Length: 516
Image (cartoon, rainbow, N blue to C red; front, side, top):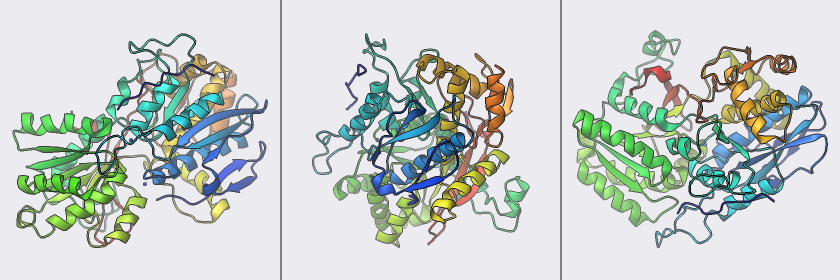
């Protein structure tokens, strides 16, 4: 058993389709219900390589958890259909971390819940005990910050503990900028993300807050002129730029990063009023939400930015709408809401529509990393995804956000093991992960190797067998890891139309279009 450092810091439409497992290296699919996949470690075999997956299949993040699970399994199936890695089949060992983390608080006492985070720790420790080659996940930034301390045991100075063996981790959803610094840069790093850091998302949110009605519908004539649509609709941007915004953010490593950026942008640079209110993590009492809403009403914001996880949003948003929809100041200022990526969650939207039909997130805008870009690579992923998932449930539903990031994480890991010539030497696999994402070892740019995409994975294995470099361009984008294990991304803006059961895509921004 590996040594562990256990000192912890004091955390989108769920698909009901079953998991897909390859039976052998062929293409036959076996359906397993989501209900029985809470804890499904495969039996260790000589002819298999087991990858751990810590994912939220229950709790408030179960929607995105299902997307991460499905994207991962589709990639495993695809790799196995092409002969596997190093002549072996890939298998996922799935642990349901139940959206758990040690920062969850008791709604009544506002104190940490006893044993909060225990499910998450059991999930990660269970995978470590299985000696998986790597762990995919967990999803939420708070969860990942905790989990990586178990997978990479080290002392307070950052030195690896005697006898400890770090385990490689790749997360496809955690976006907090803090994750960039919780481990040293490569070559001392064992933590990577195929989802971009919120250093980009918070800049995209600021751009949306300041540009107001310049945002256009991807299907409108204005959108066509901007190169994001085919025309035929109206301009549907936010009502106005935010000149006196308020920010309600989860008091965790995700929310605090937004406040650290947005606050100075407004108060120091723009010299405009700005109110920031931290919200407790986890579900809370109506009185706690009432205290926040009272501050908002007193401030009279012209827009409210919300950086929250679903578990808080589902209780807070209805109460906020109820108390402000008839408020004269809010009506006069046309106060509207802007959400982060965690609020683009079909499960959350359905809950709000069912519980409070008139007080849901109608008219909310938001930003999210563009995990489903308009590219040939994404369209190929979409074809692969539907070929597999529709065979199981016949649903025909498109994959949810971040499923591409999970798919790319598995493919990159498989290519790294093939490049390294081993699945057991963690250091070699980690270094090869850098190589296959960039083109060649040590490069900070792509384009210096044979370009590999979801459509030509066969070429990847033959090229690597010839000891030639490859550069994987993924379903979610370029996925070129920098030395901090991060990737860059474009961003998509969205809106919740009145009464709609789904989100409306607006415009996309390239990373180069964002403010500093």
